Image (tube, rainbow, N blue to C red; front, side, top):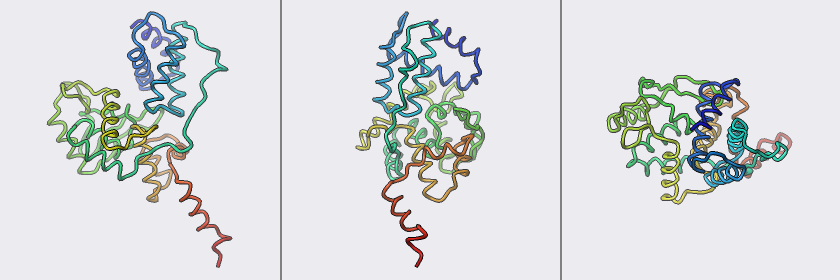
Length: 276
């Protein structure tokens, strides 16, 4: 599509890495797929697209990122866009949903008859990778017991060690899902899996198990892992290394603390209330 290529050419003049260009392009291609191909798009198309993504769990900083990407797509093609003072503010629930260990175990068990979503879930739970990062995993970059993870959003890419059971699952999967491509995750025909397919399969599983709720999607697995590790005593700096973040302060936004438990703990450790 000429409009997309025009926009990509515009982005290449800036300071975008190949990975960020790839991620941004996925958003715009999804916009065109959802709204449909047109010669010219208008602001109502953008609002409709964002509303659809919100209904699928888009929120917070990710929502703002989508907004900015679509705005840059409009600007590069000289389509009308509201003034910046009407930019969409970040909206987030006070406490974002995350998967508990029990819910994650249920999901894995229910997904065993769907090899691709089962492996994707297992890797998301073990590595804490984003959905887009799962799609970047390559068969040639798996060397038992490690796999190379391409971390997006200016994170630190590198080799990550896996547990033996996850290694066994990967090796079994590559036998039952052969492909001419190098993508680790593929569909039934051997073509690289798309994020829409992963999203659809996850929602089906959540609905089947009665676990579906607003804001609960692939990123909830990532929030869950960070919260589990923190609850089990890992330091924030250690979690930063595990996930591949460039800055340790990112951890704070992912840890989902229970307010009641936190208040009880504060009363328990308070030096003036427990000084007998």
